[in-house]
Length: 480
Image (cartoon, rainbow, N blue to C red):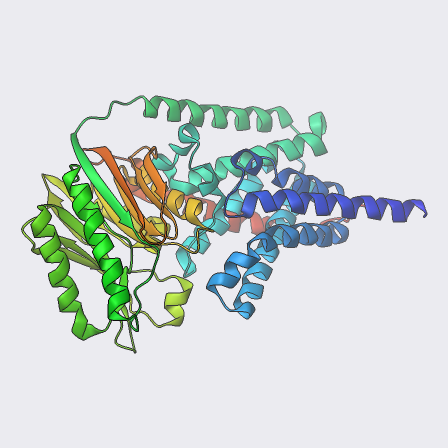
């Protein structure tokens, strides 16, 4: 084998290795520390190689990486849609890396360290605004359990966190590719270190703030078994009786508010009043607040509802889901538009359902309405995305300063505070189900910059990306 063939084989092996690393980053259970490093081989490969070879090697690596979610996507989407999504993600990674390459290679200056973060955040911002699934799976959520660095989202949302996540590999790639030869490179490396350190210090200081308020006891119940429109009466009653038993048990243990999952039953419209009456009586008998998710299917345009019952049995508030998961979109579920808050013991409680909390704009809308707690019934997909879904939801609490109580089927029962701390957590299960009793301090929502200005930082990155792309229009000399 001659030298060019050996070199090509080595480069392909490097691309495959980079793709394997990426699989541990873009999957549903990402390795948080690897997220800060995985883009480095892709960026170095793009910078050091000629544009044509770099393009197809980066594409190969991206395809290997993004295909990690094939099984999950197949669970929620038809095969053609799965192929389209993976292809789009592969092309996006290729575009971001190669667009960064063009500017870095052309200018080889300190400021190019910000190119990759700007492009990355701009793409994430546009996806959040334009796609039906928002920026689901954003790398920002990979840091949800790293509380000091997560606090930056209270200032700049996930865009600020994503900027840091992509800035570090950008600086490392420039250091590897150019070292001291980069024009004023020390500025790039120093600024990157300073921004990262400042964010970490800010997070540590924020986490030291005392938490004061009213201690509230929450109960969460989940039974994975579904009650569909065609379920037999005996089957449905068996599950419903188990919910009743667990709710009563939690009430006896001191639960003041009990949260049940999304669509514990999907029923025909004539049966909806009976289900309301049942949970009204359950709340009244146990003298507690009960939140429950119910689907109402008329065979044409189903509805996904969340009901909140007061201790006297009254239907205090209700909410219709805004953002539908792919199966719901296929079934033509109708979307709601209202934001519902209800005052309990002097604090405002907001209502949202599962996928709604993937959208930062919806989470911020509740922050603007001064919600102190969000009650979130959910239904995840066969435990595959349980961590990602629960942590995506928890990030909304950090952005807007409120507590979140999330009860999921085929997922996690989770209570998180305004700093993203997981106060209590337990997996759901099939019959006889799972229960969780958790105490949380309910206080007025923390005031955050993000709630006031929204994703301003992300849109500034979009504007900066447009400017940088205009610089990319000139021909770039090929690099051998």
